[in-house]
Amino acid sequence: MFSPQGPSLRELTVQALSSVERGYDLLAPKFDHTPFRTSDSVLDATADALRPLGPFGQGLDVCCGTGAGMRILKPLCQGRTTGVDFSTGMLAQARRAHPDAEWVQADVRALPFAETFDLAVSFGALGHFLPAERPSLFAGVYRALRPDGLFAFPIGAPLPITSRWYWALLGFDLAMQVRNAVWRPPFVMYYGTCRLQAVRNDLTAAGFTVTTVPLTALGRREDGSPRCRLVLARRT
Image (cartoon, rainbow, N blue to C red; front, top):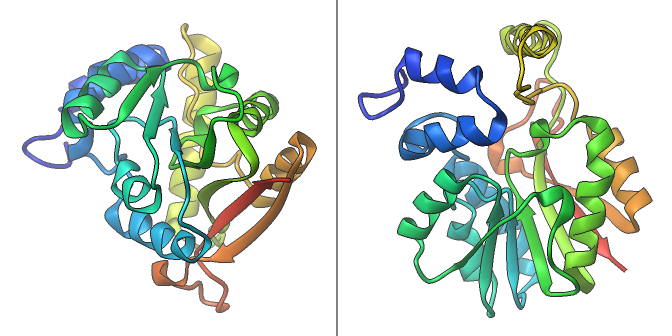
């Protein structure tokens, strides 16, 4: 699937029938050869938006996976950079790619940090958390940041109902709901649970002051609005 170096359909099926942690352990060696890895265009657009707000001290990549976020954290941060994830396999790949960074295995719903970082980023991870789990995630990031620290992550605009991707992702979410209703352990990955207003409300409840900036380099929708925004949640 995806490329000669990517996972096979059988491997993806085994992953999907595993827990989230076990599934990513299995996928880790081939993860960077799939579309699931955050694209360089998203990373570059995020870096361009954050650069005028820096430089930052220490940086944290929340749900770091194989470490793609280090591509922007290292140039933006003058101090050490740390990635946190719960998948042993993904962290092993990250260590190989970025041996000079620090890597911590932990459940990000209970981050083991207190007032340590000046910038936290996350890419493509929110779909792995049910709406009821977001408050603990955001509260942990809030605790991990120093006063005036910043938590930044891109979030896409809702797709128009006329888009084939709208129906494809809706179908995926429905399939995952059925899968999780009949199969254990659950594999939490939903595309339709991370609307900007809901995420903004949860961040505000955690104590953040929230703004957004358009990532215009990623294109605009037919109505002229940006396809993607960078959420900037500041600990005040």
